[in-house]
Structure formats: structure tokens, C-alpha cells
Length: 184
Image (cartoon, rainbow, N blue to C red; front, top):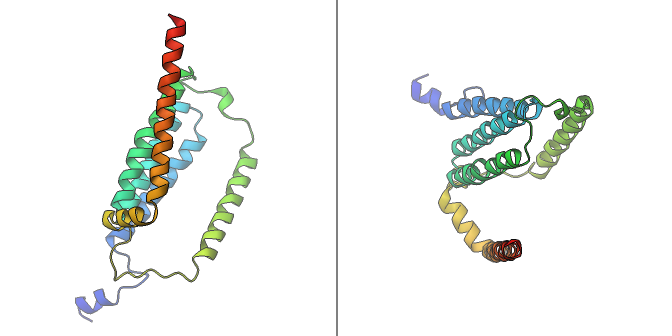
């Protein structure tokens, strides 16, 4: 067989470089997630969460879902983790090892986590058992495909959410100004 014939017959047991990178990044992300939930230091847990969420963004990039990857970085890594770290700092949470960070229910938590993961895998496999992806068509996770889908089918919910967030922002400003006048 020639090299071209071998490449044309590549199957399940001959992964591409992207597939190998996907598995390696997935293993690193899983490791970071496990360290996130098992560490006794809250700040370290937040920083390992950054690594896990960043690994998930890399997985999205490997799946050619660039828009979703950047949303993952901007929203979760950039906002949620920063909010978590500010919450830790403002509540004067212990920086070092925290003796009350472990309740002693690790085995019960592991059993619940395993049952939840098993149920989630079963539901997803059952839901998409007969669904096939057309690999010859346009990339589903590209920015163009995602943007056109969002602006065709989800415009009204996004606009309603933006009005709700604007109302919350205005309400927070009004409440903070009233409190400022009462204190002076």
C-alpha cells in the first residue's frame, strides 16, 4: 500500500494529531478539575479552576468552535473566577490550608459524583444515539454558523436578557446612591 492509500484508509486506530492533542488536553483538564475539588486551599482551588476552564476552552478550539472557546475564556475564566477570587478576598477567607474545607464526607461525595456522571453520560448517549454529524458540510462551531443561528433563533431572549441586566444595573446604581446620601 502506498502512503496515500494508507492515509485514505485511516480509521479508528490511527488517530490524527488533533485527536491526540484533544485526548492529552482532556486528561490535563480532568486532572486540574480533580485538584480543584480535592485541594484544601481555597485560593489554589480557584487557580486550578482557571486551569480546568482554560483546558475546556482549548478543547473547544480543537473542535473548531472558536466563538464558544472565546466566550469560555471571557465569561468563565475572565469573570467568574475573578468574582470568586474577589469574594474570597472580601470575606477574609483563610489563604492557607483551611481545616474546615473538608467535611469528611469524601466517599459519599464520590458516590454522588459517580452516580451523577453515570446518569449524565446515559442521558446524553440515549438522546444522541441516532444523531449523525455531517462532516462534509460547514463547520458547526464556527463563529459564522454560531452567530447566524443565534441571531435567527435567539434574538428575542438575548434582547430580553439585556433589558433585564440593564434594569439590574440601574437598580444597583440607584440603591448605592440612596445609601450614599443617607450616610453623609
